[in-house]
Amino acid sequence: MLPSEDVLQALARHQEGDWGDLGDEDKESNEKAVWMGGRIFSAYRASTGEKFWVITEADRKSTTVLLPEEY
Image 1 (tube, rainbow, N blue to C red):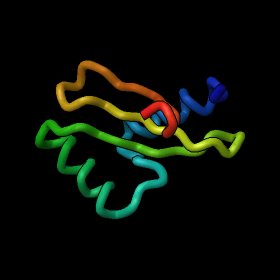
Image 2: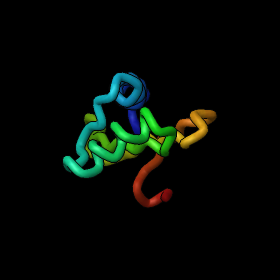
Image 3: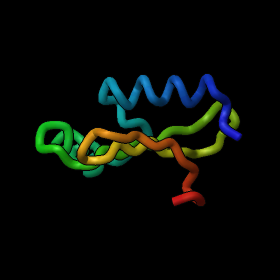
Image 4: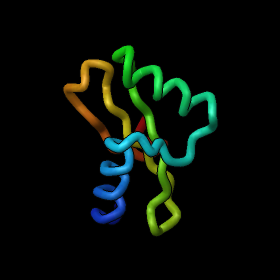
């Protein structure tokens, strides 16, 4: 289970455009998606070291936090 504080911090970073542990190409894709309406994907590490993702759908109606094995 991910610590709630880590999830809340990641959501705030995602909302502010801090895409976390992504390469330059993925960060650039996110920047384009912000303006053109595509899906936005971020990757973070919890304080436990566990990697997790935050994904906002293109229609901006939902944002999901999930572990890589849940994808």
